[in-house]
Length: 156
Length: 85
Image 1 (tube, each protein chain N blue to C red):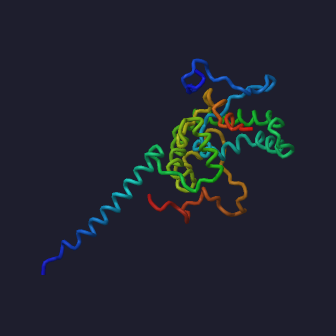
Image 2 (cartoon, each protein chain N blue to C red; image 1 turned 90 degrees about the vertical axis):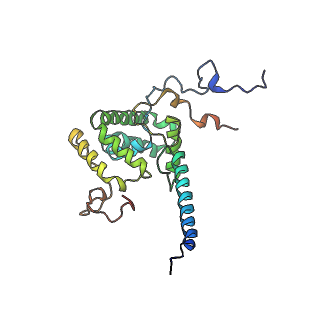
Image 3 (cartoon, chains in turn cyan, green; image 1 turned 120 degrees about the vertical axis):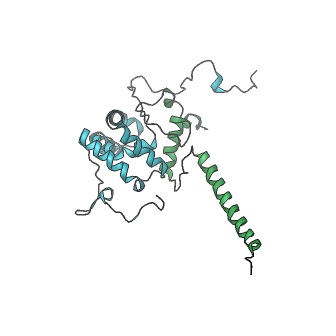
């Protein structure tokens, strides 16, 4: 009986976590968005969750131990879930179109400027969030606002 | 003098074979990537994000924008099986 292979997916009991977190650590709902929606919402997450992200980064700069920054990490996660929920409620179609376009182009921003423009417009109207690229030089237009960029896709 | 059309058959054959090979390769790549073009220039960040996508959706190219992760996400990480000491 012990030599037979028991596939875990066929077991009668649900999976039991062998190393659960201690009970004094509050539980947090994890973010369920995958890479393309997150990349689409990246600059808005940066603008919306700026305080919590900075807290987390400063906390990590003090001490890289995972246990040290659990609280700040929970706050960042909750803020991200909040923004993704709001984006799906208000700007659902623009958001969906932008991240579907990103998925078709190796998750790069430059081929998807048109859906990005509509998404930025919607986010600005509904939430007042603006996409700003940190580090753009003074007087230079950010690349996402250039109307006729030099580097575009080869086809289409 | 009539056009030597038999001499153009090999050109046609080679073009058709190149086209068929390229098309089949493209179809195979798209089928492996759920109908989307394959990812290229994948760096370690993209690799870890694709592993996370696999944990969330079951496929490295699967995408979803649900805000809350499913229950399994808490425990389906490979770190649980990586302890070999």
